[in-house]
Image (cartoon, rainbow, N blue to C red; front, side, top):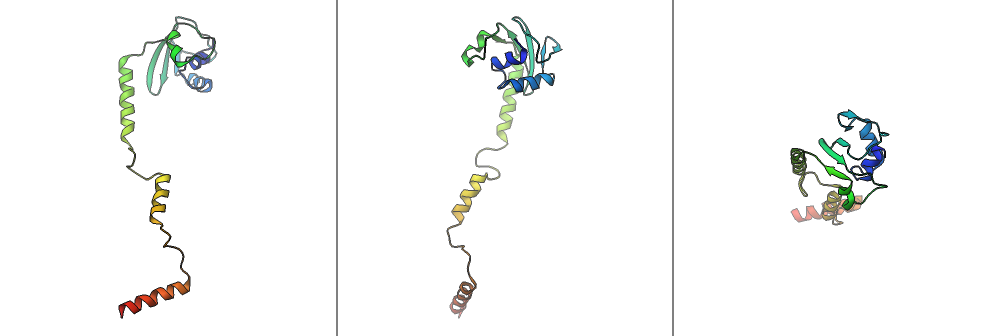
Length: 144
């Protein structure tokens, strides 16, 4: 089976296109050699994948006939990734949560609309020239 199809079928990539693009960028290798998308894989190969700035290492146990469910992936792949790589991934995910918590920072488009609806109670409708004259006359009468 082609390596791009294999990585897609064991759910390492969401689409074959994404898998092929990463292979073209030399992010996937078998042993120490970068591979092409058409490279045939077999049981026992050790594949190194650079994804999300993490170096994954997997060993191929078997070749599936088609894309498999998430629960069946361990039948076809053994994860040999080092523990410190997963720690780096956890640190990155934690640092991304720091940037914007809900309700903090610039308002979203929905927040802005809600604020506008709250502030706009209908009293700010456009006043005609006659209305302005009446408004100023009433204020002068109140001052006198």
